[in-house]
Amino acid sequence: MTSQDASLDTPARKPRLLRRFTFRRLLMGGASLDLSRLPRYLWIFALGSAAIWAPITGYLKSAPLRYSSQMSLILPGSGASASVNLADIGQASSYSNSAFASNSISPTETYKRLLAADRVIRDAAGRLGVDPRGFGEPRVRLVDQTAFIHVEMVGPSPEEAQARNGALMDAFFAEIDRLRGDELDSRQNGGLAAMEEYQNSVAATRSDIAGLQAESGLHSAEQYRRQVQELDDLKAEIETLSTEHKSKEAAVRRLELQLDTGPSEASIILRLNGDSTYLALLDAIAEASAELADVRSRYGRQHPEVVKAAATLDAASRKAEARAVELTGQGLRLERAIDGGRATLLTELVRQDAERAGIAAELSELQTLRRTESARLDALAPLAARLEDLQRDFSVAEAVFASAIARTQSSKTDIYASYPLVQVLEDPTLPDRPSSPNRKLALAAGVAACMLLFFSLCLAWIRGALIRGLLSVKGQGQ
Image (cartoon, rainbow, N blue to C red):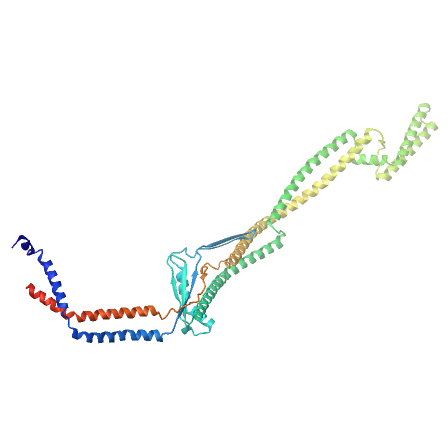
């Protein structure tokens, strides 16, 4: 035995040689297959093929044609916000988040469930006038990581499938509009109690203000502040007039000392000097005085000329005094000051005294008015403070009420808060071929079943030859 033959008997080479030998023996055993059983297997294959193709053929011939119409919806992902400032009323703001802002709520899943809701199906079937049970159920499919919703609807004809899909779309949008309107009505009805409370608060505060205004005569706290300011101005005016009055009194006293007469006497003198009769009598007195002085210088006291001149002077003096009494109502020493600076001073004295008297009267009236107004404002002070508080409360209540109204009105525009905007991306399509039954799929399934039956029969036919080959290989190995 050579080294090469010895190496063939080694334990490592023996299993590989055994496998090669067994494979050859199996092939040789397979050449002696039993052909007598072939007709039996052919009949079995024919019967099996008939069993496979009979239901497939029956399904393809008897199944009604179904057509699928598809449409696509999309949900925009942006939010919207609005803010309105109303002068002296308040501010109204509305803001709607994006439909995809929350991770816990998916609007596409919500709308998917709504599309298949029984109420929507019934509404869509009613729009076409068909039985809801025969309308069918939509197939809704969501596309991951997008806002697309694909809807498929089946019908017995292309037009019927498209009509059903369109009716479903109309019913879906009608249901969304109804839900949005119901939400807005619920919000508005829920806020009516608060609105009524705000309105009652405003009305009660307005009633309190009206009662306080009727009681105090004040229409606003600003009016009270203006009256207080007017009282302060009145006090300042009184102080100014008081100073001016003192100045006038000092001027009158100086003139009285200079003229050695009072304002009343100066007034009488000026009045008398303005009367022509009185002035003529003064001239007569002057002539009589001159005549008396002349005759006294020449004659004695009891001389008839002296007595006559004295009587003439006395008569003229009595007439002048009578005229003075007639004009002024009182006697006065006779004085003639129609000429010279004394008349100017007398006139100035009378004027200054008249101004002093006017200022004194005005000052007295203003002081009386100040005391009256001061007492009245002291009594109005607590009422004015209460009125200011009520007006502040009224302003706050009115602002709250107006803002609530503005928010209620602005919330009506925020219709996409709970049910986001959805748009039709693709209208319901009109199918050009039936979607069911699927002939290609049925034929492929029949062919695959026949091939599996064929392979299984082949394995059953050659099983005897394989068993004999294995047994022979096992005997030689022993």
